[in-house]
Image 1 (cartoon, rainbow over the protein chains, first blue to last red):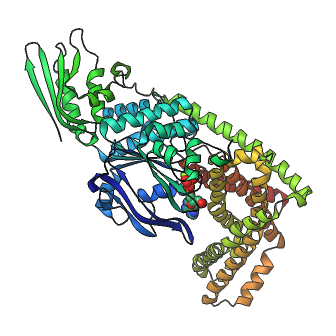
Image 2 (cartoon, rainbow over the protein chains, first blue to last red; image 1 turned 180 degrees about the horizontal axis):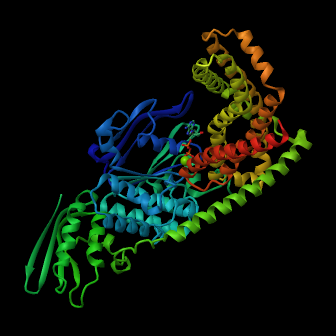
Image 3 (cartoon, helix red, strand yellow; image 1 turned 30 degrees about the horizontal axis):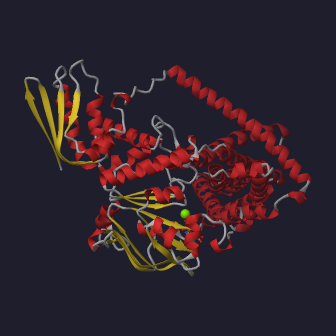
Length: 260
Length: 370
Ligand SMILES: Nc1ncnc2c1ncn2[C@@H]1O[C@H](COP(=O)(O)OP(=O)(O)O)[C@@H](O)[C@H]1O
Ligand SMILES: [Mg+2]
């Protein structure tokens, strides 16, 4: 693959430094996500994947550095400009964050109601198609308290896709899902990325899923407070000089050297 | 942007869609497309999508809407010219499996609604009684084993519900004394009977208004807080976690709150009584009645029984308010709005209970001659 031209980068993270008070989570993190690719963020629990994602969608302000979405600094944008950026994004939060006093269908309808002039029956139909995409067809009348954790994740994904945004962020979409549903989810991501050119930024631990969908990935590390590897998953598995990275991809419990 | 054009011919009609079909553009076409289809109920309709250069979930929704309409035999709707990559998105769905229109929710008659409401009140009352029993048992158990109580939690609640409520209780108590004294003194002055304002104030504040106002404030502050706290714990499954650890939520959460709130209600009422009488005394000064005279008049009229009777009532109010707050919290259903409902209901049912029990006390005191 030829190196991407700068205009291909739909998200650019430049020298990002993040943290809470004195507690620094990331230092000097830079990478870019190219238009239309499926980009995976990997790393151990607590290494700052969710925090990085929340900076990419403008929920937190960086301590230093910046995040550009299609060339616009998301933390600096305000008012209409910020809204215009946010409309290009769909986000599925790690815990779902579905609105508890609405049914699943109403959760999905909310962005449609607020941002489009679709007639009622159109919104109902589109909400139902989104639910079917994540295997929740016919469950639109249930409220979040009436469904399982895995269903909650899938409904949250459906809501993130409601407007078919340009960039979709998924925070551990496969956590708590059975392998079959998880594989179907991978197919959905690939189909949407091929057909509509949607860019996906996915936080995940599922090795099969990483190899199936990710064009490129970065791996974060807690001690380094930043990226320890970047590239295509298969390349990293086979050729990374870093034993931690090879260990992750080969799923070894200890360093490969220790294995017989 | 997307456009729509209708071409009619002898063999049927062609609906030509073109441009970008997404959630922002499809809305404008939706009705028009449906109408075009409806205008040709008996003839085949071809939807020509060769001019479509983008078609996302909303565009697919429009095509599904056209395909799912029930049509006469030989009058099918066909999609043509849709690019392969969009076709894949459309082919994920079977159009006929989407019901044309969802049936409206069945209407509930007035009689049914009255029945449902009655049933709900009845179960609520039963729940109240069951909870009362459970809480009383837990309370007595706690009083017999004071070492097992979580004193740190109790002190925390006592500070939150008691000490921090003092400023507002003082403010309202003072205001009540001032207003009551002022309004009644104006009327009594016509008869030269201002001095009897002291009787009126001491009796009404000590017996009724002090405990009542304090209890209502407590219901608004702490009853709501207890319901919201416990309700949020319920929503977050923290109550379940307690239960599976073998810790009874009633013992763990309710007893601490009820004990602390009750213990704090009594001193709060003492403060409220005092500041109310002080407020009255200040007003009487402006009517040229010295404080000493006012004091003597009040003391000669009100009895210790009035004062302690008020305090006993206050203690009962404290139990009720804290108890109903906790009960509403434990009854919280799921979702963020459920916590709001629990807090509202805690305040409303708390105040209703206060009024009801106050009436009971009035009758009981009357027969006891207090
Ligand atoms: N709002 C916050 N305030 C303080 N620390 C936080 C906050 N959110 C996350 N952290 C800390 O940042 C680190 C990274 O968290 P997170 O990004 O959620 O991890 P993960 O990689 O598992 O998603 C953790 O050590 C966590 O304790
Ligand atoms: Mg996380």
